[in-house]
Length: 335
Image (tube, helix red, strand yellow):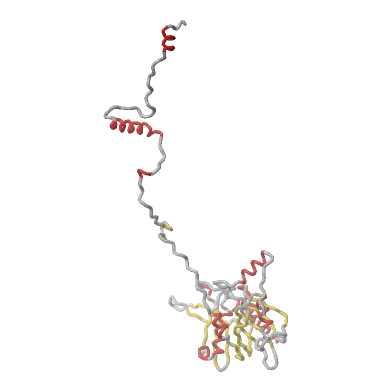
């Protein structure tokens, strides 16, 4: 299937395509939340809660229509999902469905280059909404970054649990920042794997007095909380995984010779100049030096002519003898 190259026709379309283009430092990952052909009230509440947690950072898009033609684990039925993800510029998705065979089904997955990368299927056995803890939820700042605590050896040994841990961290990562204010660390997700179940508890962090400089930490449940069962999973293919894990080399600044940075003067440079021959330089001549130049020239000519001063410049004018006619006129001016 040939790839269609889009050419922008307007300035706005050019900006949209430039925003979607690959970058060395990628944009924050957006999540696409959508429903399958049939849903239940429980799974709808799960999708609504996920959208509530992600919407503060404006990194989630929720579609309300049912999509009967999307079945991610069946071959060839994931193409509509890939088209929707490309249309809305989302690299993660949460797909909710319900059936007799798989009730309250939730699929979490990721995309790479607008193709399905990996996913894991979960069954929701128990769910408590954020609305059941109104007093505790009001103590959390909107848009704060959560902490994650994973407990259970399954997250280190079983591949499906490893994949679930990776997807959860990627789903709630948000915008990558260099520093975090400690005052903003006010909530934590506690994920426990035991007895074939995965229990997720969303708790608020409370700092209590302990009689020392280090406060005592208490956790209080705030919702949403879920008990999940891991069903099917699909790891990425080797070729796609190798392509996705490539790291582009970061461009380095070209070193400029003979320059350095100083804390006080800023940028300092060193200049190399050839030897200056001042005698041969064509400098501008000042009018005040004309007399000195004349005196120097007269001194030179006096030394050359044996002490006789000769005026420099035009040669002396010789007196010519008057002609006979002129002589007669001078003698007899009356004539």
